[in-house]
Length: 278
Image 1: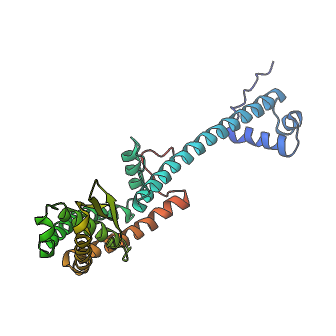
Image 2: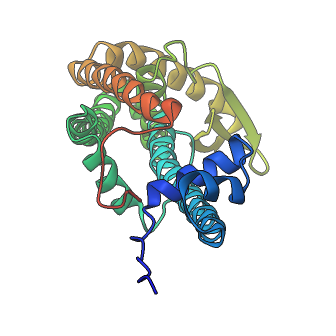
């Protein structure tokens, strides 16, 4: 009796070819077995195995694609969050993973100018805050030095100084943000504060409770002081410094938003990080 020769294992590319011929060319397992010299049971088994392998590959691909899409979405959402903060769109909710996602984005885009812009922006914001505090002190000095307010202070209206300072500080903030026509000098409101008394305020800022009779003259003085000090403050070196810093911050924000827009709108981030599914 002749010794049976065992054929070598079927290679993956062979069974994939059999599956292709079966599905695309319509060849049946017996036809493939007869043409290639294999047992029909072997052909059927290998075709089934090729199908299983294909399904496993497709399942892995779906899982990988889903993980990759979510990973890119995490990076894009972080870019959206940064963009919202730059635009000043209210309170932007933070996430416990923000620092990890920022590190991942840095790994994906290590040469992006974003990483130079961010610390520079932080420094400019601190500088703006310091300059505003300085400008508030300057405003207070200007108000205290104005002798036209002496009769009001002597009459017990000590609150007129912080009241005018608050007006000037609020106005300067609006001017520096582009609202150059903003002024509270014509927003006088006289509210009743008891018999023979009124509470005078310019916009949100209260000047104090005063008797009705001298109130008309007092608010006239206050209005003129505000008008004159508005002019002085606009030309003051400290205010011009603030305007310059804010202009630089605005230019930087524009550049930063352009870089973030590439991430937000492209939706696919080149490069790799340690959190990449691949």
